Image (cartoon, rainbow, N blue to C red; front, side):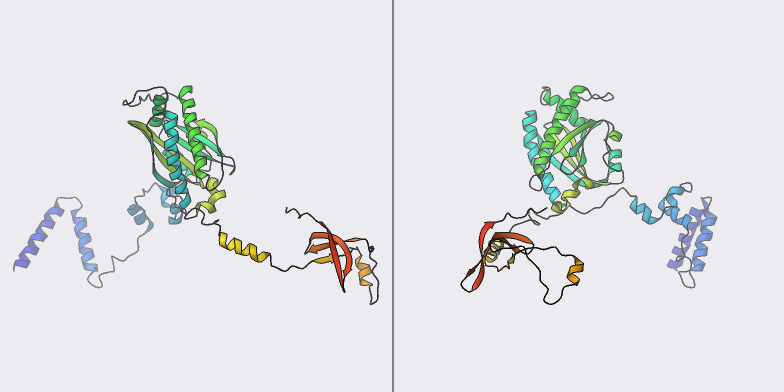
Length: 366
């Protein structure tokens, strides 16, 4: 039949292909064994459990790589470079404000047409970020005074030379010249420090609607090891800003560890401005109106006497407690434990009354 002829031709092709390889016989035997084993239930060979060596081979681990193959899957996930932390919606708003403010400030700073754009905001481990910094670059460590912690700003070499070229009168339409393989000069460091101070001022202004905070320049480093402000495993937020000055420009990266943002974490979790601390003036006015008609109890304290517990236990019906008061002695009017007024006891009609002579100051809350 035609089907049998096609099967014979296919078998001949497989035999010819296997005959060209050294392992052709072994592969043919494996195929035969699999075909025989699947005749009963079809799953005896395919459903077997793989051992550790086969799993390591599938994952790409070598036999000598004991540190990787011996680690469990949980440890591999924990030590992975990808960091996934909670989103901070208001932080995106802060960085958007920073971009707008920097566009204006850098135009005044450079007297040039400057465009600032936000590339992305990512979460990363601090140690992985230091290892990913393209050198040469300048790393600025700044301190957040109110939060008692630090942050980091990275300025890449393209932006450094562009800023130097612009501030020192470089002509427009020519790309900044890069001279690699030498340390940065004092003039270059001073000009970059001026740029960083402008950025830190704008960063403080961007955070003003949430919290009043001051970002202070601390030091300038060129070696990432000297710019360590957190443990390598600590998570941080990195915002990458692109600064373009016509055909010149570069990247500026702003890093804020999560530990630095912890004092304002609740504010940054808001979906919109004022979500957590918004005021309802209608309810405030209603509450203030009702408080004026609230009844409170006042206690008139004639005198206070200190008595030992032994004497108190010896009290009987008819025992007398002497108070050191006279008709002219003033008494305290108290609301709870707070003394509110002071006056003298008298009589009005058939009632005993107290005439207020003095209003006491409100107690200070510690």
